[in-house]
Length: 101
Image (tube, rainbow, N blue to C red; front, side, top):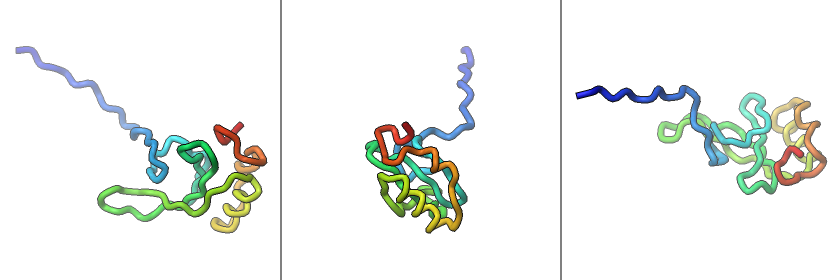
């Protein structure tokens, strides 16, 4: 009988399509416990805060704000985190499909 070799598994975590997962595929920027993502329906940016680890699901993210204007997103990021996020300046004035164009 011949032995069957298993393919090596990647150490990288699988990319998720769930907005609250730590490995969500559309993260724009992270600063400490905060991040900005593109919503899964591609309609707006979402400002989130990392929640503490829970046994069943591990790290997750809570929704703090849903925004479609860069001005609002910058204001919310400053209000919650206490500092400016220079990466947000590169975003368009209003959300457009894809979030970054």
